[in-house]
Amino acid sequence: MPPRAVRRSEDLKTADPDQEMAVGGQIRELRKVKGLTLQQLADSAGISVGYLSQIERNQSKLPIGVLRKLSDVLGVHMNWFFQANDTPAQEKDIIVRSHNRRRFTFTGIGIEEELLSPNLSGPLEMLLSTIEPGADSGDYTHDGVEAGFVLSGRLDLWVSGQFFQLEKGDSFSFKSTEVHRCANSGNEPTKVVWVITPPHY
Image (tube, rainbow, N blue to C red; front, top):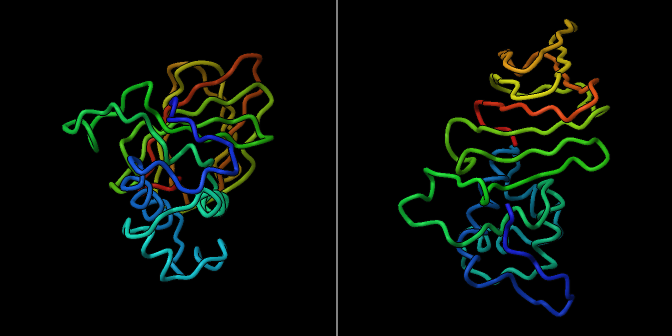
């Protein structure tokens, strides 16, 4: 991004007050994208539904320890919620500057994704994936439709058992309900822009 750093000190009791308004909305946004109810997220994070509801509505303080638990359940690093605060008001929800992208790394898989769309509350999401040599996403499915454009490198793509090898400049689209998988069998990182609807981060 780089996002505003979250200090690792255990003495830090709450999230930065300047960011709290944004954090509650982002927690709600991610929860809905992942299809979790308030009850499910609250139970998984070990907090009450009422407290989680207050957090999402920015009506309660958010200790770093609680944010860490919520982040783990939602599958993102805490830094996801802390973007640079220099975005002009008129650009919010419209523009994403390159230095302000939210990033997520799939630990142990070798795939990093950057969110190119301003948020996950709209009808689609746009991502930039960097797939390291030897990385493999494994098979998965979800609702919706997705498309992609290979910016650089080589992309191995499987859709419903069919195998395709794409090079720089190639593009593709398929229903996300079909079993799909991507990998990089080349010697350099592969970069792919994805458009997915509805958002499924």
